[in-house]
Image 1 (cartoon, helix red, strand yellow):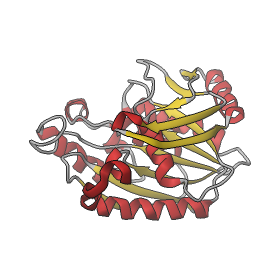
Image 2 (cartoon, helix red, strand yellow):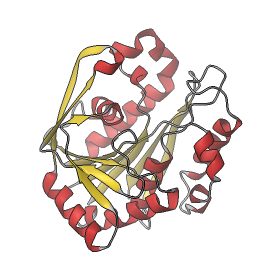
Image 3 (cartoon, one colour):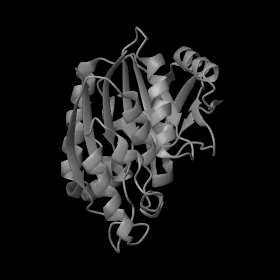
Image 4 (cartoon, helix red, strand yellow):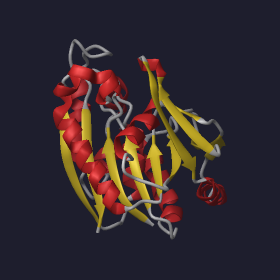
Length: 263
């Protein structure tokens, strides 16, 4: 059954070995992630589903990585010493995959032991005190928000029927175009996107989120919209206490954290 959910960013600057002195500018986000880490520990998940936007993406199919185990590093950011490992919940992945295929939902399998940073960083930040947990890494497709919300609704039917305790994490940065110093430069859609996400992510009714104009979504330079839509679909018609913990953008990229406690 699903017991907890959260949205956190995956900036490498959140990691001490990379962010160093810059982490002081992310104190609000770091404090919020600490709250989420404590809440996740208390929820005692046996399986963690992470929806990360930087894995393999297909135009018309969602996917999950069904390797036997996983490793993640931060070598591409200059940190050659940090390594994480995680066991795969391959049995639950298999059940979910079979169920999705029975329902004609496009859900495909990949197999790679290497995790990208949109999975590695949440694992580093959130599982320091957890033991004996397993991972399901999910990658979004290139379809729209409505398709991802519906995918979340459907895979929830499998996850929530499980005896295992399942937590769901959306690994999601918001706009990368919030200022002239942003990685993607400045775009008026960047601020519009981040404001709309903050306004709609805690609503029980997802209509505003799912009908956001496509030009705002794509021109904002975001990478979190589809993971967030998937996570919210998993909470459809569930009794969930939703709490926004933080939002800041000191480097021109929107970082938001939110917590979803299952009542």
